[in-house]
Amino acid sequence: MGQKKLIRFEAIKSFPNVLEYPQDMQGKWGTFFNNQHPITLELACGKGEYAVGLGKMYPNRNFIGIDIKGNRIWRGAKTALDEQLTNIGFIRSHIDKITDYFTPGEVAEIWITFPDPQLRGSRFKKRLTHPRFLRLYQSILKSGGLVHLKTDSPDLYQFTLTVINLFQFELLFSSDNVYAMENIAPELTIKTHYEGLDIAGSNRIHYCCFRLNQPIPVEKDEILKQMISESAID
Image 1 (cartoon, helix red, strand yellow):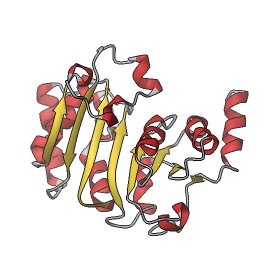
Image 2 (image 1 turned 45 degrees about the vertical axis):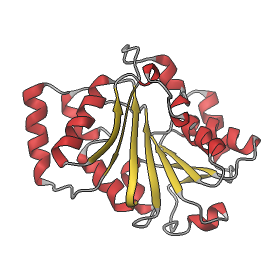
Image 3 (image 1 turned 120 degrees about the vertical axis):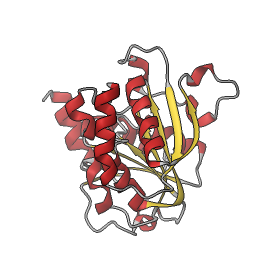
């Protein structure tokens, strides 16, 4: 690990807006933020551009970025501290542990921003819109809570639409070319470091917003696997 990464890993240990694998925080975020405002999560937050950007747009809501890479979290956490944005926090943790940190209904919205699309077929269960993750989100989201995906990967975008259709979730909006839209929502104008890299080489940003308004039976996971195999959505 590089010297800069080591310095940043050490630095976040003293940041008051960063918690690493926090214990006993379920139901206590009102104390952390000193208010009872709605909570939005940014998953795979990287440098936290969305958590910070949304925090600036909506001072009466709380935002928590979650990522395992502490050296990346450092950037967003430092910006929030420097700009005295007290409605923004970060958790250093694996995303599959989020149910350890929030009670049922404690989260209002979830943003998934430019996650690793896990393009190898053998890794599709690691996609953050796979049903195994959606079950975790559903267990902490309030009724009617929203899930947003923003990605440059057409494969992840199409995979997510397939999941939404298979499980009959409520799809509120989708676009395979966000910046070509008229009257783009302010939230969608926030750009992350990884968006700028255009790793997928698609020259397009894809977005969808949906509600987990239906049960997510495990039995359908095998159907999804078969669909992926047959249609090569991998």
